[in-house]
Length: 308
Figure (cartoon, rainbow, N blue to C red):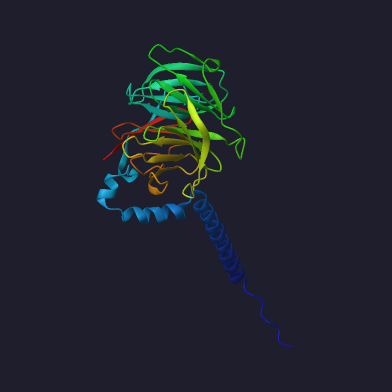
């Protein structure tokens, strides 16, 4: 009976090393696939290809996020390190921004350069996560924990706001009660509020007279374009009527047209669109009436983007 020779020690070590490399490569592949799936890089890749086919005329008729560059990058909002910026909205009457802070509820009014003008305490709110400037000095505020919408009046003399002084609307239950309504925007063209549910991402509308009254019922918009891990904030461009959808978990800003179709996107990662570093947790987005773009990130970072 023939006896097979035993493998030499150095051959055995080589086999073990090769198997170890195969294992590491397999693990790296699994991790890369998981990250790509979570970040929806396949969808972003398809949209990136689609962007390349868009004509200059179509780009001019949209927001066109690839054309934006950060001109204020991660500016610190002083004294708000523990307050957690949650949303942002532009006021066309005052040419200022209103940000809502969720952990210790208050509104903060900012210049377009991210300088603090004033803080307005929000008495009675639990976890304000969305803010939208409507018309005639009216602001809508969503409280995620209370599942409510409150419409308040803010003018130059406002020093504090009490929830009991203003009309409140019940937003109803969410599919995930801990990941409820977070995004909020005012659409002046359609005279309606646009709501965003955090997870799973979903959009709703509610008609209004632009001031303190909501009419009819809240309606869900059916869409398969929200391929995001979560929905953090919303904004409506007053020039095009297009919607901006922000996702903190996906590090992504997405543009949807008036039909809800994807048009363009911006990756909120270091090295893209003029960002020196990745936006840690983007929670608010706003666009002014000339097309400048603003964001806030937890805990207290401010960004401004301009189209180049």
